[in-house]
Length: 381
Ligand SMILES: *Cc1c(COP(=O)(O)O)cnc(C)c1O
Image (cartoon, rainbow, N blue to C red; front, side, top):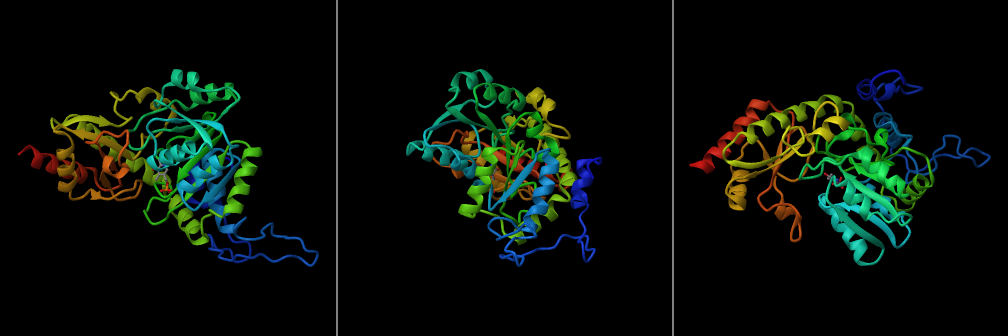
């Protein structure tokens, strides 16, 4: 199936059929143990479900195909996937991360740094000169990139970051949650690993907590990552892996549809007198637009943020006045969500206190625009 498009691979879940029953829909295999042959070997290649399970492998194989990688591993959450990368580092390793990134990962890195486990520096998102001058050749092990960043929608040039990081002997890991492999394939741009919160748009139905790592090379780091997942057991359950694979079969329909809605809403908000800033890389006025246009295809993602005139009190009122946008944390479902973000992140957040984050679903764009219009109009009066 290597000669067909990724959307075809996803729709057909790699064209799998069950070898003895002919079933076209993948099965859930809940078994924890796998039988040995009389000689003690494991003819199926499976030993115990903390190490391998056929249900994970189908979703993993599809992710490998969509990302253009050589290996993928599912984890029990996006956080489990992200933290596993850092667990493989030797004590005292230097890590460079962006100023704006998924806040729970950022907090976790700060805690690691506070205990001396890693040495941590932040650079402004997309600042390549800042990255170059912050790297410590030989000591920097990981350059973490998140593009577009949650929730500020900053864009980082993946190919340029990889070149700079590799020259200093560091690996680049991209949190590709917001873009998904439909819009951007970081490994083909030179990143070493891509990480996903598959809870978001990969699954797309807000009913699974899952994470994934995909690698460009089958190297020592990848072996360590596999070891870590097997030892600590932060692996996805087979039922969740099955739901995730079912969700991924429609990812090529859902992602562009949500991105079209996001662009439409961003354009509407950008012209609204009640809005002072719209953060969306699909807008030509966005500082990262040209880089995003180069490294993304088919849209700029389902997430956008904006800041209303009148500051934090008005932001709260708007969130409360929306009817179709549901007030809840998360991203990437088929239903649109809204969140007043800074209070969620808490003290010390770099997110402006009046920032409203939207996750666009696949509803009718006119309905979503009308909902924002009525919420903004209620403030104006
Ligand atoms: C949600 C999210 C995560 C964390 O994933 P979980 O599945 O919730 O653990 C990481 N990065 C980004 C960009 C996210 O949006």
